[in-house]
Length: 477
Image (cartoon, rainbow, N blue to C red; front, side, top):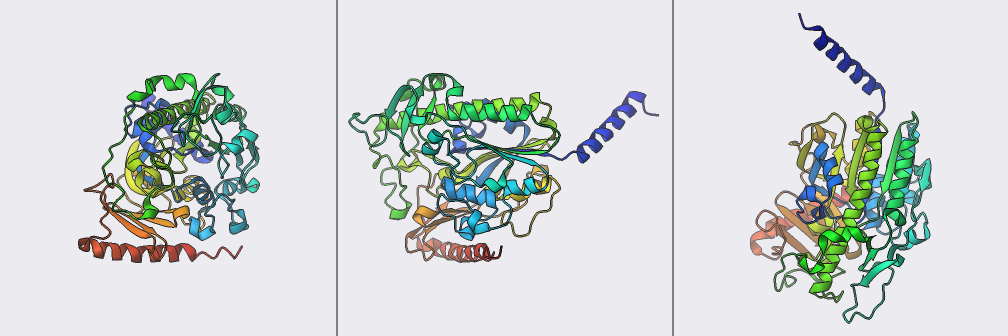
């Protein structure tokens, strides 16, 4: 006969499980802007410490090969929120997907129609940074998706403090400027002065005031998107800025790649010498540390309000970011630094893990529906990756797919190869990298006779992939 305490413990566990089954999961979706996974300490960075994101990773599943579907903000966000690849909706710029998807539910809207409160705080669909943050506007938002919406205006590059324009300023005479420009501001004041501090405060208040209605809370942080603005103390770990290390670079690195493969921002066309490059990395890391601190405030509020044990938490970015690799900076390119994203998914009760399966941001929509026992529409172009949360050794994809609309580029990435093609007819050129022998993507094998069969196979796969993506008739609403 079992001792009474053990019997009581078993009864309580069964009762707890029964209550949990009757209580819908909440969803807390946190997305950063322009964040490369290589800037996070839980992904191996030993210079930029991100303790709060690391803490989430220690409890959840950290995906090492997650890919966005568009390498800049507009197409990526429209894709993950609509459930369609960019070439299915035609959203290749900075517009809302609503005109293209018609009455189809977005990710948030599916939860709204299931009885959830759905709240957007700051940038989820596309929103201009810094312009949209300065004026507190909605950007290319989709009002139909939300029960409540909150914007988080901030001073951005106009913040009081010590600022410098790094881009296009070789003689140092250019003042601090706005726009999509590499500007660093070591700002006066505390976290609450800036957009992300306000976003965290709003999210905390919403968590503290939640009633019994299940929620889908989407929290968008705009750092580390340029301008690299953060309160001055976040810069301290990186002083002197000259101590920052630049990535490995090879002479003639661009010689074997097509013109379309040279990123839109480079050390050369930005006129950034080594000092400015190192300061750009320091400014980026300071912005990441500031954003991480805001994530910590939101996660602490989730715990303090007693909602953590019934809330699925997702952390990711809309795309990656170059920090000088190949002398490339920012986003847009289809190299791994730009196309790959951090992705952490925490479901209470599931075993922490690291998963090396290929996944896509497009998969979050069907996955959360599945986890919340909601029907998953067959029309969605993502895959349910919830089985990977239970068994991280499984695979749901052999290949990840991503596009760079500005260069008319396409990426197919599998375990062995990274295949990049510019234009559907390949007239803009092709890149092929052996990711086992050349993980930093220095040697383009696309013109090698020994790899002609590999290139031909990928060209066929790309044609088939695009045909399948476009097969969904979005004209039928």
